Length: 264
Image (cartoon, rainbow, N blue to C red; front, side):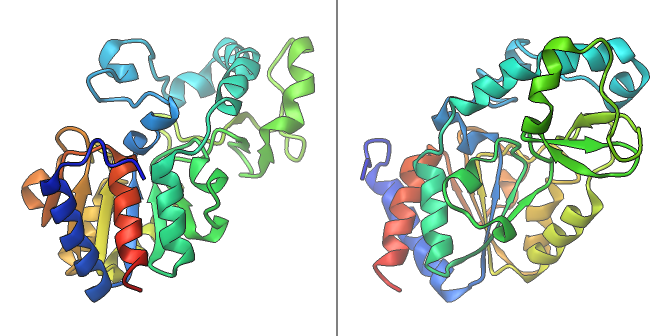
């Protein structure tokens, strides 16, 4: 196990967290882009984040829905984006959460991420709640039907217009949530319900600035949960955290998983 990035003080704090988790289950994890940076996927708001550096400009839901040209540009760029995601693999942080899940310690992982790496690491689909969707799916904006991205790949080289939904003819869009697009109410409801039942809420790699998703840890604490935040940099709930560690996700979660496994 790589503890290079962990100081004795970090390990002592994680030992304390392991004790709290054993005493106050269930454990719920809330993950953001910071858990996937060790897989080579840039975050958004960190010092080198996509939006901080201006290397990516997010489009809004209204822009996409109102512009056929915008939709067509998105479709034509899809193969390149898919190729980039194929090259990304789960890291030690993802795998550590799976070990906690398989040990019966982690009840659910609520994630803002759209990369599917929790599932690639072995997390059960019914244990992962994706609040912002998934890049591997296409969703109809009219009927809500979801399709795998791979179903459309062969169509893209010859596209002269955006493909319609095969079921209803509606506008197809990435399964991820764009700015200004309503959040998926089912997933949000499940996440809030899990938060209210949490004994420990473990935030990993999120600045907790994007609402309503960022309300999940706050709701957990309001209902009596212990709030632990592992993040490189500040978060919106730093002042409320019971435990706050500025540490990389991979080494910290790996250490925590080992400590929990040795005392179950």
